[in-house]
Length: 219
Ligand SMILES: C[S@@+](CC[C@H](N)C(=O)[O-])C[C@H]1O[C@@H](n2cnc3c(N)ncnc32)[C@H](O)[C@@H]1O
Image (cartoon, rainbow, N blue to C red; front, side, top):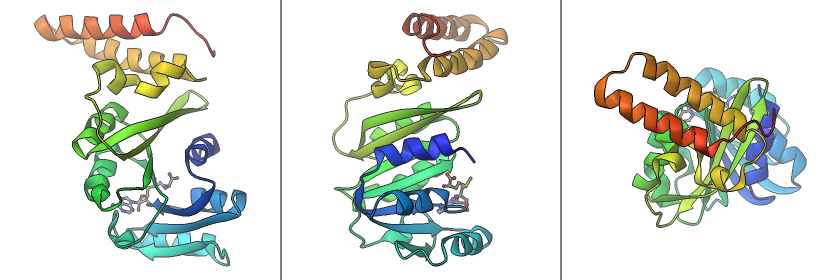
């Protein structure tokens, strides 16, 4: 359990209003929000019966947390929500859940993919979601990326924006150097087996990230 990741997500969420925690797992984010923000009501959802039972046990007695069983955004149909958090899943699961995002036009979505964040950033635009804020959370060797998005027109993201995040690129928060190193490691591993035009393309991508990252800032 990474508290840095949950705290970074909480920092993107409103401090009052109605917030849903989709796929709440053991309820750590819901409990954090209920404990820290007096004017917050949380709806914690789970799609699997084992985790739902654990969630119910963890949140028992919490007046500010309501529970719903069901997949994705379906248990939230008809709800007016200030924010919806979807954390701790892969990019493709999050994108599947966001198929229903247009039913929540004024809502802030806070997303915490465990992997393939560039795929998630690309998919957001296809679901009419625009990135409005981002955070990084560092825990040991790992950098977690958190994204806030709303239903709004969004320009296409450049390859570098997809990789590193448009807000992260502008603000260079703590963890930025480590994120660049993480991306470079993956690209260099792919480069070793690549030939021809793919090799050239990967070399270009590596150069682009090296130019963006001009040495350790936060080591
Ligand atoms: C790794 S846990 C993450 C828990 C918590 N959100 C966190 O970030 O610590 C992922 C949880 O998402 C739930 N889940 C996966 N797909 C879901 C979906 N489509 N709708 C609701 N919950 C889902 C799983 O049952 C699991 O409990």
